[in-house]
Image 1 (cartoon, rainbow, N blue to C red):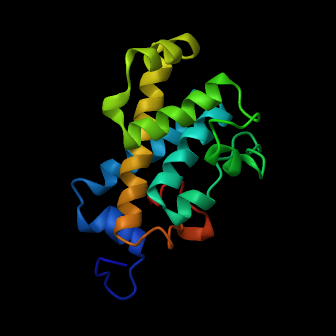
Image 2 (image 1 turned 135 degrees about the vertical axis):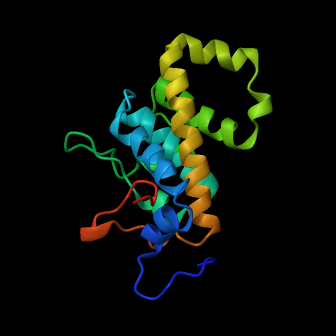
Length: 167
C-alpha cells in the first residue's frame, strides 16, 4: 500500500472516508451509484466494467462480477471481454460497450463520427451518457485503488466486497 494507514483502521474506510472527508464520501457515493441506478443490461455493463478493469489492472475489479437479481455473467465472460473484437459471445451492444470502454480509456481523441454513428444506432443518448459516467467512474476509482495499492484489500465490513473498493 502506498498510503500510511493508522494501526487498527480499515484501509479502504480510512482512505475513502477519513483521509479526504470532503471528497472521499462523495466519490464513494458516485462509485456506488453506477451499480445501484444503472439501466444498462448486465452484459453490456459488465463488458465495459471488465474492459476497464483489464486496462487498469485493478486486482479486485478483475475478480469482481456484478450480480443482478441473482444473476452474474458466465465464467468465460472475462475472456470474451479480452477478445471483444472477435468473440462470438457478444451481441452488438455488448461489443460496443467493451469497445467504448477501451477507447475511452486509451484513445478518447480517436472516438470519431463513424464510432458515434454505431453507438447511436444501438444506444439512446441517455444510455450513452450513463455508460460514459460508469466508464469514467471505473477508470478513475479502479485506477486510484490500483495506484495506491488498495486493490488487493477491497473488502466491506461483514466480508462483502465493494464493486470499486469504496466503502
